[in-house]
Length: 209
Ligand code: ATP
Image (cartoon, rainbow, N blue to C red; front, side, top):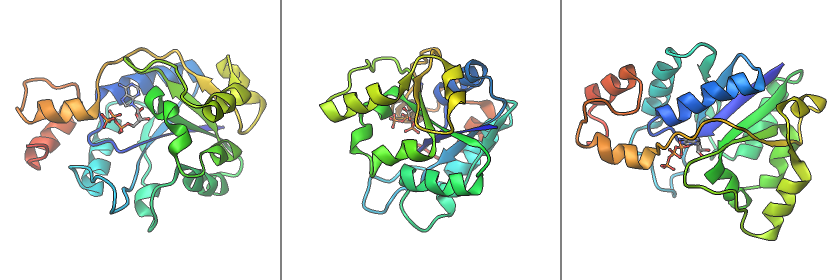
């Protein structure tokens, strides 16, 4: 079975994450996908919402979409969220499954700045969703070489191995970023691009004011 994990800050989760993931499930032919909020180390810029609130919002959003689930693994760990370490642990937890780590194009373009980034493909496939305004333009030879070594062109190519492949999906471009969204939420707009239940939670908890 393929298990897809979409990692991110999710401060807050928004329709950019949700609608693209829904399309991705169809494209990959999978029936579940887990959103995995990351723990942020104390020395880094902190999210506006707490870890618990980010997870709560992910859980609320998942209720609107069949097959979506929330994964709190990174928030349960007493160490920073390094994707390679997380995937090593998840591969022990799910030894019989193929793991897919999902990210947006902006994340792929800066992947070579992640801790032990090359190890990610030892434990999982990487699937990348395009993002508007973010061209496919790897900076630096090492990232370009890495992508070329691992890239496959069809989602079905992910089935030929348990890890080590990188696929760039054809999911729709949905022009929403959490940074811009937080700016908008400040003004409590009528219908921001997030599920209603998440907006209700934001208002009740006085987030992003
Ligand atoms: P920020 O504005 O702070 O960059 P974000 O909207 O990118 O926030 P994150 O929680 O940081 O949200 O993103 C988690 C993952 O989701 C990242 O890999 C990011 O590339 C991806 N992502 C975010 N928004 C979209 C979108 N609209 N379409 C596709 N992928 C997205």
